Amino acid sequence: MRKGVTLFLILILLIYSGYQYFNKENQTTVKVGTWKTAQTIQPFFYNQYIDGTYKIEVLPFTNPGDQKTALLAGDLDLCGTTLVQAIISASKGEPVVIVSGLCNKCSAFVVGNDSGIQSVKDLKGKTIAYVPGTMHHILLLESLKRAGLDPDKDVLLKRIDFFDMGQALAQGEVDAFCSGEPYPSLAVSNSYGRILEYPYYEEDIGYINAGMLTTHEKIKNEREKIQKLVTAHVKATEYLTNNKDAWLNKAAEFGTVKEVLLIAEDNMELAWDIDQKYINQARKLAERMKEIGVISEVPDIDSLFDLSFVNQARKELNK
Image (cartoon, rainbow, N blue to C red; front, side, top):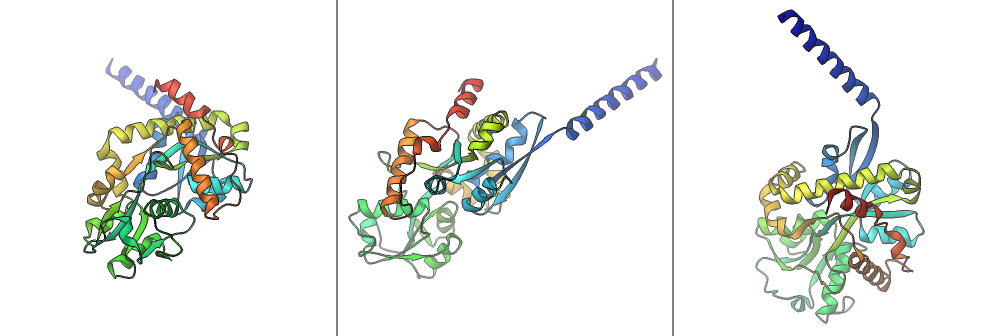
């Protein structure tokens, strides 16, 4: 009897192992691009929320332009993008489509910890670090405009890479910078900077920041795959939003200590949903980009978005 049970268990194990081997051999590898940051982390969790037909390979990048280039070359199925980069691509006639959100917020205006600067108006005559053509650049200009400051006459804008802004502020090379997390919170944690302002204006550009991008061709030819990716994105976003320790512990593996991430937490919003308000804010963003010369023409913003995937995921998950 015991021998028969043992043989039965061995048979079951062999069948299961064979199934697993067969399943892995027949998986379709899907390549997704993103950054290794807390606010763009969701693709690293896709494998937990997609069926065994697909295997997700996450490729980390350092900027959205390279992700978009890889996407258009056919090396990625889906990738992260800032709204600014997506609008630039659309204005060039590139066949890109945003199919879900990725993150909102994440920007901050930072000044020296011991400076007497208490409002954006106090930046008159000061030097501000920025990276041109980015979301943070747009928000910086919007803040200056609202404070009645002319960016060409009242302040000196100095181009400095995001990675070097903190050091420039600490050494007195600049008086302020506008950047994305975790650099503002790193400045606060290391006591050389403090937050002057979170540059969000609900009635204007709002909190929008980044989304997930694919191409018209992939939507036409591989719609089911894109839907499964977006649904996995929604599930991952919901899980991480409701499980902050899991989110920040994984994010800390990317190199930013958890203490800094805890400071940044309230200024980072993981996202998936897109609605008409979001699209209207993206249109206002595009208009600002044209005003400052980042793009020459505002593209068709409605055609830049395909809401069918988040709508289907919402239906499937009763969101």
